[in-house]
Image 1: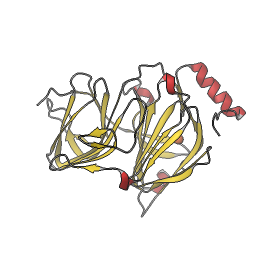
Image 2 (image 1 turned 60 degrees about the vertical axis):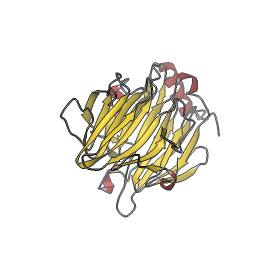
Image 3 (image 1 turned 135 degrees about the horizontal axis):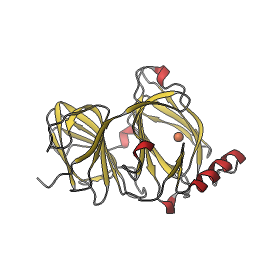
Image 4 (image 1 turned 120 degrees about the horizontal axis):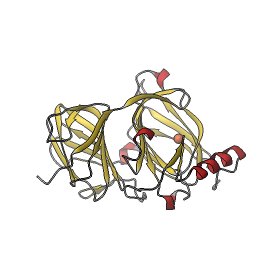
Length: 285
Ligand code: FE2
């Protein structure tokens, strides 16, 4: 077995309130800068109680980042300043590059009483912070599912596994984003791209993410792999495991972050909020 990456950090997601009063779990965020570079934040808004999410995320701006909505249940209806509107349905993904700026609202809606998904924030390098905004939206039935070995099922959202490349492409920094399901006690190995930050967030069952230790990590655990080594080796627990896996090349840029806007300097943040107040925030209409 090739040398494995150790788990550098493993910790539970924390309850927090966002938007107009949405109760969610934050897997990691501002407090963890710059550990997950180029990733900034991962929110888990799986919820049983509609009161936890129905207030949604009314109109707000973004600049300098990408936000990725990946839905398991229900849907998120969205509408934005470019006149774009639609919904991300269960199993689907919306990879939004905010670039120079977008103003949008995102409203979670239950389907058959269920609602749940994730939002990952990916930082843009300094050279790309002000690129034109764009979307890649992919319904669930267009995300390939592969089974490279018995008991392993991978939804390839972005990145390449064997011959299969996920539908979200041409993203700066070539991140990988996979939804991996393992049967009971099934092992899984994956080669991390050179120099990439690699992380996993457990969304079902449990697994051992560092075979040098005897530790089962359950649902709602955020795992950051260390920099040494190129492979991750994981073994599911006796009820199986499901996790989101993502990797990306660190930007190593200075980060100035206020709310939904992430730039490189405080001055750029001040400008962005000033433009938002004056109505000159949007470069592209
Ligand atoms: Fe947003």
